Image (spheres, rainbow, N blue to C red):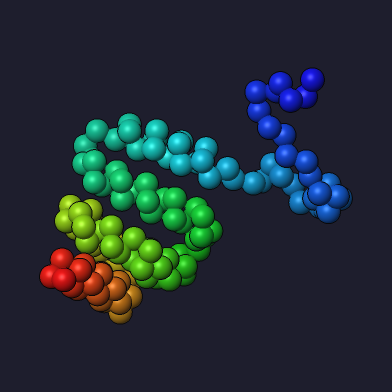
Length: 135
């Protein structure tokens, strides 16, 4: 009986069956996240906060399909908006993110204006967080 299978097979729509897309190119986010974390565990001279930030960045870049150097400024601003609250709640990760942006700047992948925009986003997150604490 089919219902006793230990896994569930999703039926495919006829459009998927007839399309020219190759499913081998698809990335399973859960598997990619697992492999990313496993790879980061091998780093011994990196702090836990640096590993967490690297995992967040790698996951974000993969899901947003950041493929070219020219995408990095947009990605940094979007990452700051998406994870800003979490970053300001963890001072160590907050500084890891700032140092990472400096490294991107040193490699010519990030400009000063974008770094400033990211820092303004983070400052707004800090201000919003301190307003919540004051209330």
